[in-house]
Length: 76
Image (cartoon, rainbow, N blue to C red; front, top):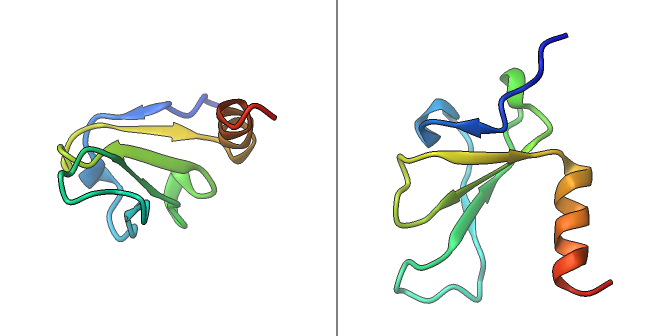
């Protein structure tokens, strides 16, 4: 089985996903957006991109990796 890429060169390679932004985000567009692809080789992963560059690259995380990352931020 081939290893999935952990980055996608262009967020547009994830068609049909709904990008979400935190409700804490301001109108300055200085945040990240997240999406959960439901089809294709990235189904089940979490995609994260820079809101200032919506056609730019996206990082891909497994649900376990993302949970570990967010737990570390919250100091749990």
